[in-house]
Amino acid sequence: MTKKPQQRTLVTRERILDAARALCASVGIEQVTGDAIAEKAGVAKGTVFAHFGDMDGLLSHVLLDDLRAILTADYSDKWPTDGNRLVAVNVMMMQFVEVVGQNRTMMRLFLKNTGTTDGSYAPEFIETLSQLDETLLQFLNAWKADTSLKPTLRDDREPAELMDGLVAFMTHVSVQCQCGQIPNMEEARKTLFRHSEAWLIA
Image (cartoon, rainbow, N blue to C red; front, side):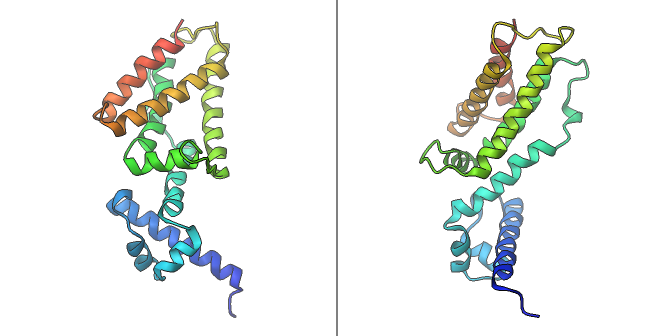
C-alpha cells in the first residue's frame, strides 16, 4: 500500500535527521554540508532545505539532541565521593558547557535558538532549557533544605536567584571557550568552580 503523503514526509524528514546526526558524529558538526546530508539520506539537496529551511535549522536538531541527553545521562562516575555539593553542582554545570562550548557552530546555534541573537525563539529549546534549569533548581533547594550538607550554601538569596547566576556563569564560560579566553574544558571546569564557589558559598 502506498504511504499517505504526510507519512512519507515524516519518514523523509527523519531520514534526513538520521543522516545529519550520523555525519555530525563521524566528521563533526562544523564539517557537515547540505550536499553530504542529502547524499547520505538519499534525497535531493532541495528536499533537505524544504524540510528544515537552512543548515542552521537542520543542525539545531543535533544541538537539541545533545541538550536533551544531559537530562537523562548518568554522571555517577563524575560525582564527588565525599558528597561535596559544590563539586556536584559543577559536574552538572559542565555538562552544559561541554555541549554548547564545544565549537563555534554549537555556540551560535544555542544563541540563535534561544533568541539571544535574532529573537527567533524555538519552543523546543526553551522547554529543554527550562527542564535543565529545573534540575539545577531542585538540586539547590535540596542543598538549602539539608543543613548537614557541605559546604554550607549561602542563605541570603533564594535558590531561584542562585540558579540564575549559575546559568549566567555557564553561558559566559561557554562564550569564553569559543573566544579562546579559556583554552580547554579542564580550564573551563576550574573557572566555573571559582565562579560558583564565590556565588554559592556563605
